[in-house]
Length: 148
Image (cartoon, rainbow, N blue to C red):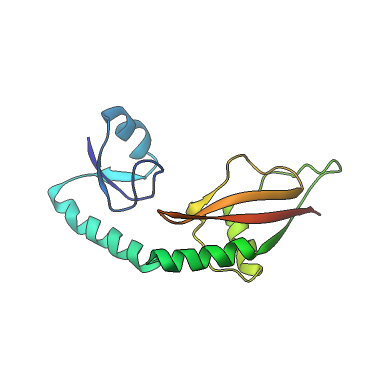
């Protein structure tokens, strides 16, 4: 099945890419969640629009990505969340919370879809997450979660 990706899918591609996937994966996962649309000849216009929008917000070069990575890894990001007595959070920390905390800490504006959280953050204390700035550059973000 030939599809046009509308969102970034790990291990598959970026928005605007035309990919060939198995029928079940496309029909049962990518299409219902809105991660992709069916490829058609007229879909080339949509591909151009998606790629133009992606180029406008993406970090352009490897050097720029490395500079941003240096700024992000030097930050000490503090985040206040509601927590119980044992230090366990009510809910978990989301990528949107992390992006907002980085902005408040004086860091660059990041895309929440590029934040990689290995395990859900559900406790107070120090945690590390990764942000994918460029296909070749990832930067660690040090989080200090405080309970309220």
